[in-house]
Length: 439
Length: 194
Image (cartoon, rainbow over all chains, first blue to last red; front, side, top):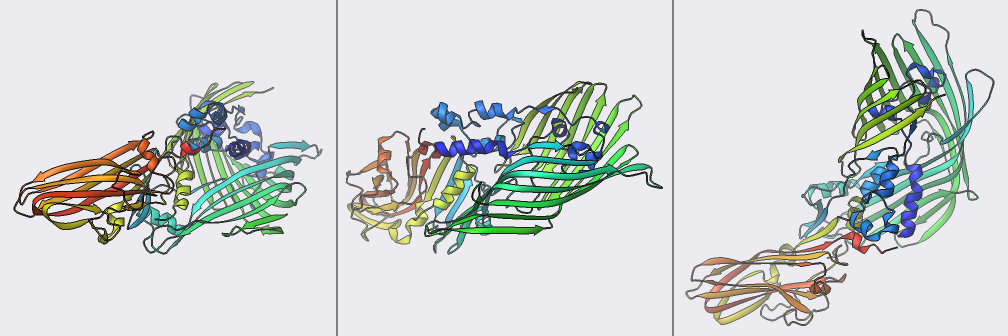
């Protein structure tokens, strides 16, 4: 148990990336600027001052909950076992751990009762209110081959002396991709009330993680004025390469077959783990990204396509175990030529009012590997003060409200944001804040 | 009943907290089946006693009752409950006294769960009915964590049964209309300390 909790804690830093507080206050919108070059390389050449700073240093407020709140913190297992045993909630922990830059105000709660109804008609599972439990969950990247790499957490620019050419090296790590997936018949039969006779049901848990070194070469520039177009166009391209040091793709499935009365029989387990670590394999690959941005009147509009073309290869070990407990380990190489584009579009429009105040509208949409997200929001700028609001969709509706102060050398931003909790779907509110000092 | 491990795994992953109670709600009325003597007609020249669910093909002899096993919640129970209802009709011409006594026994008590050895009476009730009158006996009992009787329940399961006794100079029709047991477990009670 102790090892499990330590392992969970070690996973924390990789579970989530911080998001600008300004963005959270606008419902998750990413405004045009160099900070959006990850999604659209043309933004690398875009002036940062056009829409102001994205925000200062995000304060990891979630660590307060993770350290102190009994329902969220697994640390009580070591310091106060009774408190841990009576209060810890895995769903609350999972929700907070994946959002370290938000202080979750109302952590989600697991159902107080899980009821197995056993009768001659079979077995069904409900919560204490008689409603079926939600059994599936997914978070982050899963089966990461072919997808865009996570944003490097340590990126060092290398001077090139050439305007628009940017070369960086860095390190990346992505953990998560956790998914719990009941087979379609298990999900539908539990939701409808009972298991069927003589039927095999399966549930699969999977998780993925990888880490390595990245090297990026990008070029972005503003094009000369185009005839007949009263605006400005920026284009950019990026070659993203990586050398992989660690890779883990784990899938564990459990299955059972019901008897003639719909009663589950013994459970059989099978697993497949493909792993790489330094000294036992490696990976490498590269991907091509492209983007274009257009300024027109008071608006800015961008289109970025990541992973336009990519190749990657991992050499490691595949460890398989079957239902009888037989374990085999074999060397394996997986490679993939990927055309799996991640599309990102965004736009912003600044409207100056007669009073001199400014209303900034922003929106973005993204599609990657079957996942779709959408955000729209606005910011009202009056003197040094900012008010923000917005709506977004990322596996569920999210709401953002925020405000801040923007001075030439200092900024402070705060936001209240919302999202839907894993498994329970509860509407959860979080508080985020950032501080910026500019020289 | 067999293993529910897959469903337990699901529940543990989706409802894993210190305040979550996992409940097995077992409808014994449907599981015991039609041959277990859950309804019948008795002639009462004096007194008669039957034991249901019948496990030895003889209603009038004590037996091991019904074995409940394989549930996902039997380790270190948080609570236990039973609800049982017997509908009774005095079908004769004389007065009737009818009583029911619910028994809980260990899984190992396979020969007689009505003798007070490795078993216990959790609830009992008696009613009297005039000729032609109908009524019902409702039994309910709960055991909370710390109750010594919970020791009868282990991960091997437990046994339940009810003895029905009728006395008078008449005849009676009885029918169990509800018979469910509830076993509760708090999964976090199973977590070992550091």
